[in-house]
Length: 460
Image (cartoon, rainbow, N blue to C red; front, side, top):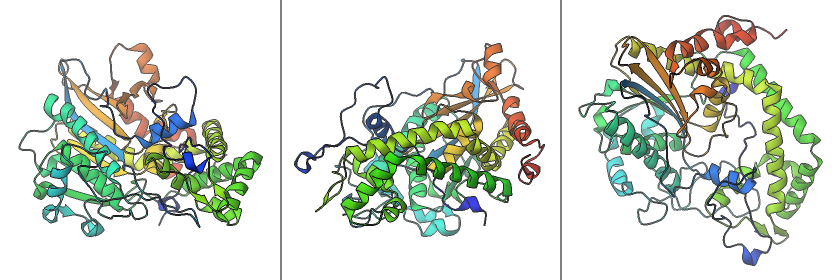
């Protein structure tokens, strides 16, 4: 089993929250944010990361000149809002209910119908262990890592938005679509399976379970049968060393961890290992007061220092390029599958027209990096990355792609289409640019011509 296929969580730019220090005034911690602040604001970044379903989302998916025809859509999602993967020792776990209750906010008009439809799920074809996973969350106190009602609603909204664009407007799939026209894949976690089913339900309402074939992907980077890559693991280890080095140099960060450890009454090392940000983010996203003990409360002064460090880490990560080298090797198998599928459809095949990969932040983040989309935010809950392929109606043999991240068109931010955008009036990127990038250009930085060679060639 490859080193990367462990759930390695590179220190994410996970957001942080605003909170008063007086326990009596700790009822509300989520501020009302009406407009985007001019400078980076930890509270605003936290709000974006939580992705609380409130206002209708504007998106650029499905936009093209009228003579272009949409022929394929491939979607890579991060699961929705979840309960923490880690607990802060000696504090009360966040009191979050994972039962689905349509009359509790946030909700969705189709939430009740979704719950009823999920009860018919045994008719579906589910790979391996997926058939034993619950199809929606159902615990009165969430289990660790469990999808919440917020997470379900986020993907019900995603599916509804994509349906309005790709089914109702662009007619991507016919009303009598078949199982062969879909390709569905998820990791073996309940939160990713449930996120995929929520999106799918509003994308294809009341779908026939017999047409659903959900494939199980055991690797968080979706490397399938191409996971053996020693140099990828080398760059990941180097990146983790860089992270560690930056952290130990930060005296303010160390003081904050010492202080938080005193509050909860554990050794500093144990607190750091419990990944407090992951847990405290849940408090913030669900508008629950941060934890207190008899010694004191964790408050905003702790979060500001941690957030500042995370932003510094993100900046240094871009400069040092170790993560970028890791990302190229980590994502090539998935991007290669994507390109191969698009090429088959461009040649006239009518299978796997709509693709859904349900994944994690450690899946989306390296894909964004490998594509060269350096300005993208760290993947929020229910983030979506969409690859659209269009056929030019005036020149049917010509195909183009658009890439969208959370509804924003990022096609010309990619490393392989920046120059093309400067020279062409076309609103999209030629498919061959993407093919050349994945099949050849991804390996140039390694002085290699293939994935196999790049995975084994030691840096000079």
